Image 1 (cartoon, one colour):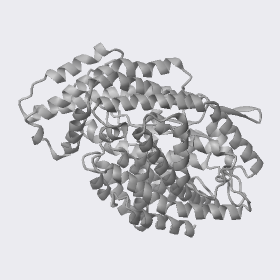
Image 2 (cartoon, rainbow, N blue to C red; image 1 turned 120 degrees about the vertical axis):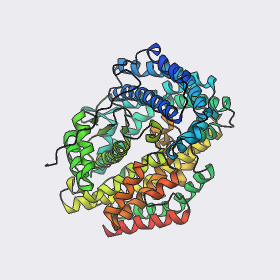
Image 3 (cartoon, rainbow, N blue to C red; image 1 turned 135 degrees about the vertical axis):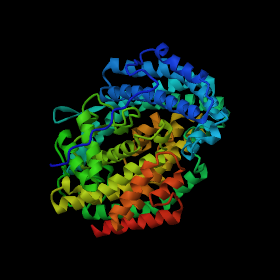
Image 4 (cartoon, one colour; image 1 turned 180 degrees about the horizontal axis):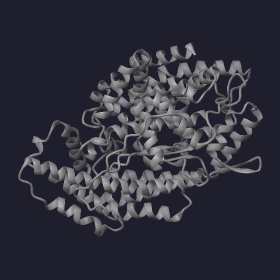
Length: 573
């Protein structure tokens, strides 16, 4: 693959912190907080310099924590890496929180605050909200929550099954659900569920403890429940709880019928009397699973080529990450589940983590995280970290849009027209099914934290009731009722980052609209997409969506418009 020579990134130079600063004890860090807390400024220029120095400190701490997290998730069996991460959580963060609250006060109380450039407006809004909900008694609770929530990754990373005499990860096992032999699919599915069942009670107990801790944080901060607290903490300024309910309803009404229609066709084509959960991923024409790549090296090289085709600079970003070793793509025992793009605010070059096993879904994950990476690169030179720290509704717009945009260049991964069509169809059908799952997960979390005293049994009953509303009635779950009732346990976000999930749904709607624009006028759509990303978080969410050439809208009419577009594109394949 021939590409132009990569333009080297300018080296970051610290102006406030020592270049060789070691974050190995609180006493090494505290002097810089004291400096910021005690510093006097007599002009707007000096006040802005204070903001820049504060941002430099935040970026350094953020990146140090990031690397501890990255290394821990790459090898959850390594106790030293776990201890390193927990050291930061227990010995650094609790000290940082009170200082940050004081710095927030100092920022807002300054006579220069209203003279800052317009770009600071959103950051100041966030600082004011952080001051409102801060409670010192929550610091130890939040430390414990951070420590406990990480147990989910360790528990699930240790899950394996035996298949054909080998121990394989659940990610690898899940890829076998595309096998054309129905007996194999059923056997693998049941082995997967039997393994998950072993930790059912452990995960229930862990989650009950997390709910109790989170509820106490909310009560301490003067909120009726953790849901209301979390909305404030997440800075959801641009939409309400009622908007979430509207999203739930719109998705159920407009997306479910399309999915059920597709499942009915699947059942008919497969000539099945009953469409079971292990029949939903296999190719309906009996073809072997798509195999877009063999190794992690091949995945990144093909992704680079694909991104070059979208826009040359996007391919360069992935090449830089490859050169810097900021990629860990292949699944292995002891590696935490899932995938992520971790922004590294000081370096400006993010890290992509995932569990690739050679499937089409891995390609989607890679281009998704690559979309996040593009976002990191185009905002890396923004003045302060607050500008680069975009809300999830916008961050996920970057990634989910790239899933659909890059699809137009997936010939890099799929060499025959038939395979390419299969991949596109699978992607679009998955897009619709994901919206249903997102609505269910979000609705479930509303119930959980509005009813924090619920029992494990009540939780399972409620999830079953909710998921029934968002699951295709064509799928036969008889004999698998318990599997369905504990399906929520497979969702990492519920354990580790509560309420961070509906953003995927909002962004998915936005991504469909971006892709629709791309189909009509590729260059203009990309220009708008990139213009929105370059704004970071200096505008409201609706303003950022508008910059991308789309709407921030959850109404049933708009969801129907986008759903009809996806349906029409599916029919063209």
